[in-house]
Length: 224
Ligand code: C5P
Image (tube, rainbow, N blue to C red; front, side, top):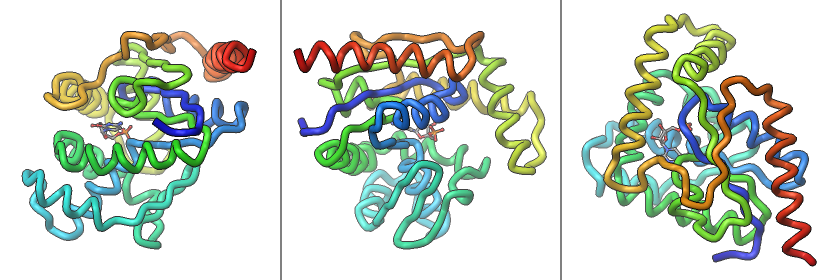
């Protein structure tokens, strides 16, 4: 499916995926792929251009016109920096339309596989181990309690200076996860061969070290 080696990191919002994926990519010397940012970019473009969010065909056609550049912590679309614009509560809530759209999922899956043809990847999302990279070198699924995930998300939002109520974040997180888990296409779930890590009581470094050790062992086994 591609030449690069792929480590997948799936799981619900707030389980620590983004931070862990970034640090894991750094310690391994792999590229980072934030696939949630891709769904957010399509959503932002649809909202700005008044594209019908209920229309699979319209969303898919829009996605195909976008030129996306992703770097760790930065997103650009058609040359414009959208790093902060894709993180608003409005875009987060509306992202379910792009996530439910088979046409969008097909376009983004192709982008994701194309990235893996060129680089070793740590890729984070909901369906990376189950659908996009079934043959990945290593698959992880991170989870944490709802309350802990909402606490982390609320802290991130507050750090950006947006006013936020914990109960609203908790409610939004539960609703989004329920949709991600129950959607007909590419539902969020651990791949049969994924290692599931509960991060509720773990520090970021502990998680990164644990995952890096597993990947290194697999890399060593693959090269011997
Ligand atoms: O991870 P993040 O919160 O940025 O993802 C935004 C939304 O994009 C998720 O709630 C999910 O519905 C969707 N998504 C997806 N498949 C992925 C990554 C994200 O459906 N691989």
